[in-house]
Image (cartoon, rainbow, N blue to C red; front, side, top):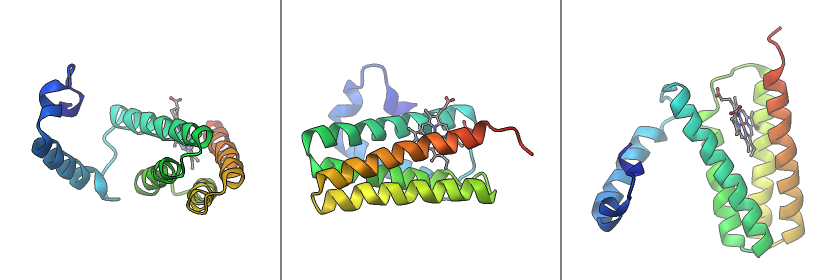
Length: 140
Ligand code: HEC
């Protein structure tokens, strides 16, 4: 991938290039109708999920509400766009539960409520584990 160049330096120097690359990437990745590109694509998605989750935790410890809200919104965006492969009602229910917990983080951040955001973060973590537990169950 171009944006993962080993040094990163030539790309980082060119802001217009980065901006247009960002635009192109968002056009490519933005639509819900984008087909799943296989394991490597999914792997990247999972990495982004973990990074955003950690960003929320970091922002909680720093009481950085702007970072909290933006990380929660990033995660919500990822969830909305790309986790629509499983149509089963159970999966959908887990997904909705996850969205609600993320909205909880985002709203608490907006209202600058640290305890509320921390509670929503814990609920979100439970939601991660619950959906994954469901996914490991054998298909009936
Ligand atoms: C609604 C269901 C759902 C929720 C909620 C969910 N995930 Fe996932 N997650 C998936 C699915 C589906 C996969 C498997 C994707 C694939 O590879 O096909 C996955 C895979 C992963 C993987 C890779 C697992 C592996 O075995 O390598 C990680 C890491 C991950 N998720 C992290 C998270 C984190 C962190 C959260 C909470 C912030 C979360 N997930 C919430 C559905 C979910």
